[in-house]
Length: 62
Length: 313
Image (cartoon, rainbow over all chains, first blue to last red; front, side):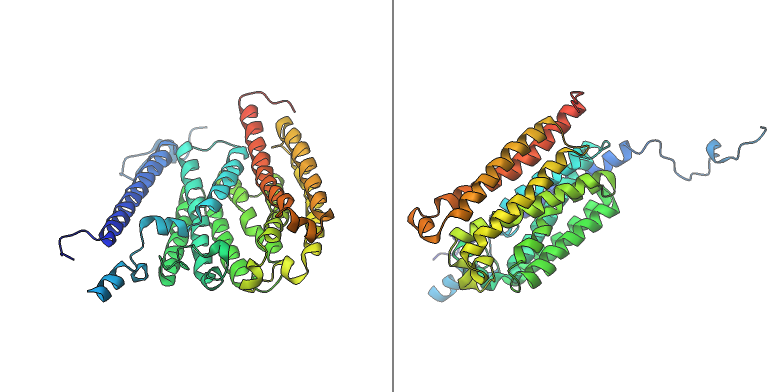
């Protein structure tokens, strides 16, 4: 058997690598899609960026 | 180089194809898990973002697949003996036992964490408990110890609609418990019908199936008893908030047919069954599959009608 010739084992291995690669890609896509859905459905998001936020100031003058 | 070629081409070297790992997840069982979990999620009150719902179903299915892989890892010895399971990835030599264990554990962890993050922690924990129940309580403990293995172990297969419901609501309700009870009570007649016509498989493997420990006439009577007990559970679901006219009509028809089939099985002798190659038992087993899909399908139709504003009662 010449070394360059493709063995059935190589076909199987390639199929497995391809399957695993696609699975990982699909996983990344799902996590990305989930992140977008969570952020999109989460309403207004604010970071602590040292800017005054009116909703945190106790109500006064009532 | 015959030796080298043989060892290379042998699938015992951990060189299984991708499809062999997929087979390890019991894809046919996964379809039932996906369907019932999907129905549980859809009929639950409230709205869920489609992507979150999709992710939840995906990882519930993956958790079911992971428990299938762990089941195959533990049961490899008896799978080699039974005709029905002889071609599974481990007994056929395509996947090594340690690989199956690694795949099962890794996918269990991923599915539990991802469901917890996508839906809510309670749903994630519920999935973890279900995997534990199926692998440890059913596979490792009950299956080889008691003829009630199918009855108690059936709970694992009955949890998915409750997990779907929990993913949508974050809790448990009477509706989700009744969906669980429907599958739980359906499982024994379904599996015992299979055991009746799979003949010597379980005996050869030393699994204490009811047909082996109590005999086939007793199994026939057990099928009838569980089928009759299933009726109030199936009809009771129609009286809850997720029941509707389509479900009620389906439940009435399917339960009448199921009880009729079970009476037919209970009345038969082994000689009669042998004579027609277990025709009645096989058709009852097929009917049991339609039974479950019809009930959950009807719940789905009623939920869709209700959301479209076609609520009748």
